[in-house]
Length: 249
Image 1 (cartoon, rainbow, N blue to C red):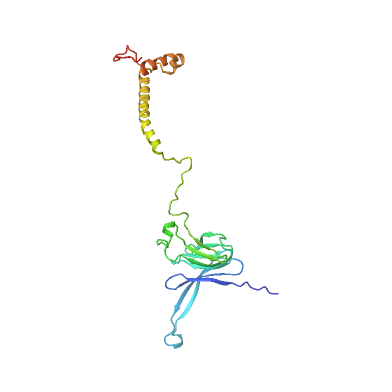
Image 2: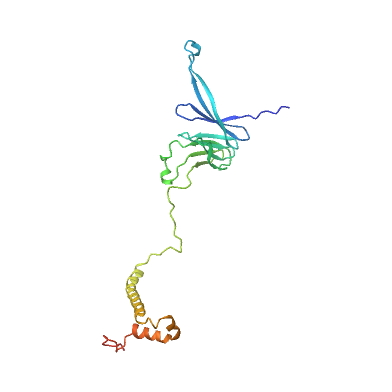
């Protein structure tokens, strides 16, 4: 019994230029891979002496044939600039095929539960915006629909043009002060600043007046001398020091 040859069907076709000289077809069987074929149309003029040959005859020549999908294709659509062929497979996958490099730019595997029934490529160049793309920050290259009653939008962009808004965590969240807290803070912060200034002045005097007492060997041998110098020379003034007229009691 002779084995029947597999039936190959053309699943889609499209013109590749505005002059109609380039034609693309997608063909596949019930199983197996799908193939993309580029055709060139050649118009030959008949002999003017022969009236039967005066009509133009259309000749088509195959340029190349390459595999574009490992599974059969069920829907196709060519972009407006004739560079990207959107392909939908029977497995529910979407392929964005580059005609210039003859390779798949991006594949969305099994995004539909049933075979893709129709596709629509981008009708305008990516430099122009379709409704909703400016607000969303994403330019879509194709739209698909399937027998699963779902529609999907697909893009070659890796990320949105709009930066996401970072939500502050509870640890970094600062609570706004109430009017009473703000009033108390305005009163307390001035004494705190004065105290900070006094501490800085004391540290400066310690490094100048009590430098020897606060040296590492002196502190280890006699900590009392360092404390006496800090109290008598820096923090508290004796009546014997020049310029002291009244000693606090």
